Structure formats: structure tokens, C-alpha cells
Length: 130
Length: 126
Image (cartoon, rainbow over all chains, first blue to last red):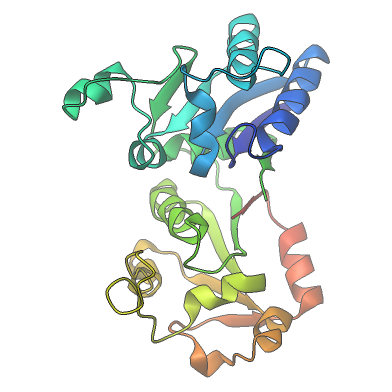
């Protein structure tokens, strides 16, 4: 089966990203396909490359990055939600005249159309959030 | 858009318009999604029914700090988003009537809403 995944909440604050990760990992290990993981609302904060969680805790961001590398997952951060929360990649940072960027290279920034497209192309779109 | 597939998309709005950003950002999804020519239904339930309450004032007036965006619901028709539904129980529980709302909606009881949900290909809950 082909799944799309929508994550609406930030890391650590909320379980949504953890549950989505466990679901994605299990689905991929069973041979299912995930056409896209889309990060929206505070979910965009899952894409920060600057998170430094305590050593005895899971690293939510790196966990997604590892899964991305292993399965060539398409991890997409909503540009509008990201910008209003100060999440910028290198391109957007220079375009907006900011002095830093914080999006992990395993993620890419794009528009909300990517969420709709994921829903159209997937057999199931799973939402993780409240 | 050239996508040939037309799916039934339901946007399920469940949260109050202010106090959090869910309602505003859900509306942004609906507006972008309209370009994909899908079969769209918008449902307002739980505190989401407050999103359609007429006479909203924010920011300077109330100090809530968010811009007042309720006029956008009235513009949805121009985006061919024409199927708006309100969950009857949620509306009644909050002391609201159809006349309190700023757009024309179809009122659904529990069973009708359950049937509509079951009929969807994609349900996006905000």
C-alpha cells in the first residue's frame, strides 16, 4: 500500500512525530511505500538541524534523517508554516536577508500543494496530531 | 492542474478560530487545495463551529493578536469550495443556530456526518 503522512505537531512537545516515525518505519519494513511525509503547523520544527536533545533521549530529527537516507523518503516542510516560525533553509535564508539557516539537509521546503498531491497519489493519507 | 484523478477530500475543522493557529492554517490548505480540482467538503465540528460565527472581531479590538480572517470563508465559493457542512450537535451544544453563521451551510446530524466521512478518500483533520 502507498501511504502519505501528515505531521502537525512539533518534536518532544507532542507524540505525533514519534508515532508517525514508528508507523513509517514499520510500514517501510513491511514493504509498503510512503510517497511523502509532510510537516505542517508546529510539525515544521521536526526539521531543525540545530536540535540538541539530552544524550539519553531519542533524537527525533536525526531519526527522520536516518529513515530518509535508508528509504529515500521525501520529507517536505511547508514553506509558509516554516517561515512564520523562523525555519529557513539556505536559499530562503539568503532570499529573506537572514543571517542563518536551520533546516536539516534530509528535509526539503516546498508548498502546501505537495500535501494535496500526496493525498491524491497515496492510497491512504495518515494524519498525526491532535 | 492536470491531475486526472478526482478524489473526495474532506477538511475537518475542529478547533476555535483564535487561541491557536490550526484554523487559519487549515484555511490555507483549503485555498491551495482548491487549485487541484478535487471534490472538496468542508466540515465544521466541535469548537470548529466557532470559525463560522458572524461578527468576529480580533487584534486591536480584542487584544487576541491574530488577524481576523473570517471573511475568507465567504470567499471560498470563488474557489469552487461550495460544500460546507456543520455538525448539528456541536452547534447546538454551543448555543449556536444557522442564523449565527456567516456563510450558508448544510447542517448534518451524527449519522449523516458519519456517512459523509465514510464516503471520503482523504480526511484532513485540523
